Length: 476
Image 1 (tube, rainbow, N blue to C red):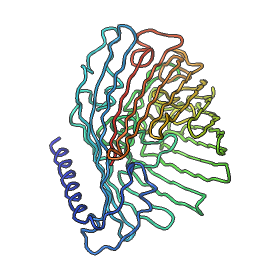
Image 2: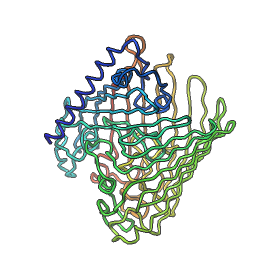
Image 3: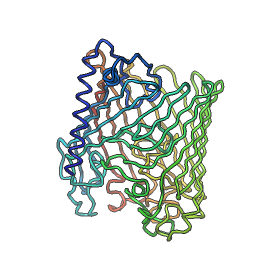
Image 4: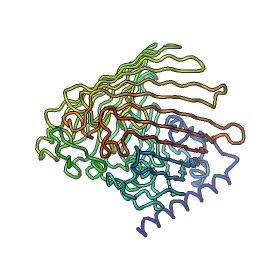
């Protein structure tokens, strides 16, 4: 632990030192994107400038980051225990100037608890403790509210004419299944190799190999074989509790992505291979004009043959399962508002399964606090809307989503033993301008209601609840 603290102290010390060099070189400074933590494209086009001394590699670099305050309050059904917490933290990122095509970067992130009620207080009816509020801190150490720093990025990148290659702890480009999902205090983080290539401007390729992960709401880094199964492992199709953590012997994940656009049509194709676990293929096609958007997504999943060599309860996916999902959307928008109607069907050929330690699924029906993972033979209907409230930096939105098919204790297509539910989200977003540009406020209200089963053990921290989220972000 002392070694870990010392390494972070050195990291922040060097980062502050580089900040001073940046100020000294103010006459050479380059602009910083306000949302640079996610703007990988902007980074890849950072122009080279003459280097006269080694210090210019740092002095001409850029420093960016964010400060975030997050208040969350979950109000459970009836006499079930309620929880609330407020976390504050931030991230600081250094990206060097480019020299001979090379650049490197590092990002540190930290979180502290400002206040909360007792998140480890057991509910007297179910015996459970807080769930969502712990996700603001460290879900793997529920007594840790202060030692919450993480070296999130430490990479070297080589830029060439039509792309770049990055190795280390890197900020990935989000994909529909593997993504950062920066909706708490710490996003999902990944270590590996990333290759990006643009061909003739209309064809984009990404190739990646990920061998280490630091899941959202955690502070440690894990080898791939250790990281899968850290969270709720759910149940097997026969109702047996799944116990695949540290049994999968997986060395990593490979991903191939292709995107293109022809006239009003766009195509996205992804292939993920989870070593020793599964293959997942994703195809998305969209048509879009000034007002309308029509889209369809299809996913097919096949198990790796290694799964059949494991004991039944140690498998991530059963050998006979063939997860399939079809999702469609119609969207209409004008300058002031947007409406979306979407439907997703997980077919009865197997459960849709993808490790929750790698991100969250992004189908057309996916909304905050609702995901498809673990379901088969299930339908999801979602109606969403967004409206600009008079000024372009103040907007409101809503989501209504309903699932069809899941039943408690029907495990064949229900990994996490959830009931069918309906959910309503209300979203508000306000961005400040002028002197306070970079600061914005987000409000998210969630109401989720089970449709069939309201037993305390079924709904606690899952359904029949209200949740209030208020987030303040300042990006620089």
